[in-house]
Image (cartoon, rainbow, N blue to C red; front, side, top):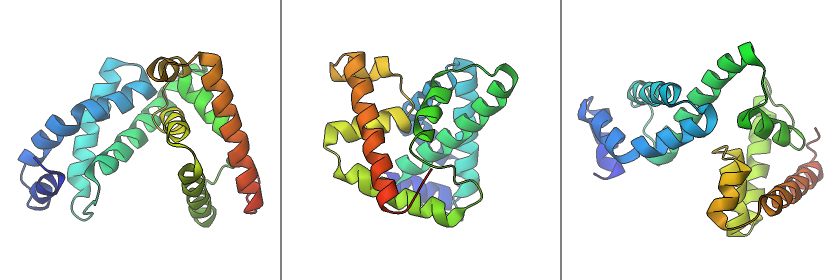
Length: 184
């Protein structure tokens, strides 16, 4: 079923929308949740919450890109779930390492919506300027929160080469943000 048809099911409040979303994007959502949570049970709960949140969000929203829409919801829910769980443990898992890496070049914009939009635009411009493989590596690490090992395996590279590319891209991003007047 096409995304437009699935969105139409949501808009008409047809419960088949959830089944079709699960059929088409269940694996995608599960992958996002697993990369962040590393727990099958928590990931399944997160994906189920994604379907409920999507049901409650369409309408009023009518997403142009359903995959991105539900991916963002899944990621947000998984990060919230991770934050609650790690508040008790305070260990340094992949998610915390990824957030620490990004913290080196992107300032915290909590509470500053305008700066958040400026950073988003600058980040999108930066990503558009990267060669496709580097852009994919950056997105895999910092959006999907894949491990360096998984990225290296998928791209046929050594882990040290992936780490070096990520470091160089973060440094380039920091320079670009500073040129645009955004400081850490």
